[in-house]
Length: 253
Image (cartoon, rainbow, N blue to C red; front, side, top):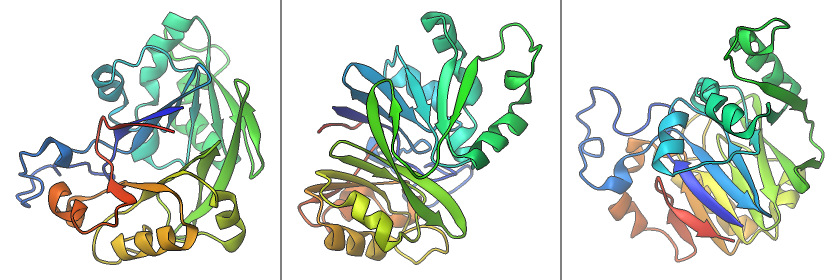
C-alpha cells in the first residue's frame, strides 16, 4: 500500500493570501502546502480522501490517472470544493464516481452540487453515486475500510483505517472507543495545526500526546498551518517516530 500526500495545509493553505508571515514567505518547497488530501493505492485500486479546492492541481502534480472511489471526512469546503473536477475520471473510466460519506455529508454534497444529482442533469456534468456510511466497517472495491469518528469541535468527522494505516484530519477530541480502532496501526496520519491551542484542531502538544498514548510505529502530521512554523525547524523538535508530512511525500505501508 502506498499513500501520497496530495496536500498537507489547513483551510487557507500556505502561503496564505496576502500574508507576510515568515513561513508564508519561505522558499522551502516543504513549506508550500495545498489543502489537505491524500491518494491511497492498495490492492491495485486508487482511493482519494477528500477533494479540496486544489484537487485539479493535485491530480496533475502527482500524475494521478485513476481514481476508483472518493472517501469524505466531512463537508467543510476545504475538503469538498474540488469535487467538480472528477469529470475527467468519469470520461476516462466511463463510469460514475463512487462517493463514500456520512448521511450529513451526503446531504451537503447534494445541496452544494445539485446539478450533479438531479434527474435530468446538464450534459457533461460530473457523474457520481453516493454510498452513505455510518460508523461501521464498509467495503470499497473489495477493500475493507474502518471509519473512526473524531470530533472537530462539535462536528463529527470520519477518519479512516485501511489495514495498518490510519488517516485522521480535523480532530480535536477522540473517544476512548474510537482510539481502540487506531491502536496497532503501523502508520498514523494525524492533524497538527499550530503551536498554540485551537478550539477545533489538535495543536502540537496535543498531537504528540496522542501519539505517545497510541504508540503507532510511525506518525506523519498533516493539516498544518503557517503558525506551526518552518518545516525544517519544527522537524528537529519531533521524536524519531514523528515527521511532518509535506505535499508530494509518498510513503509505503
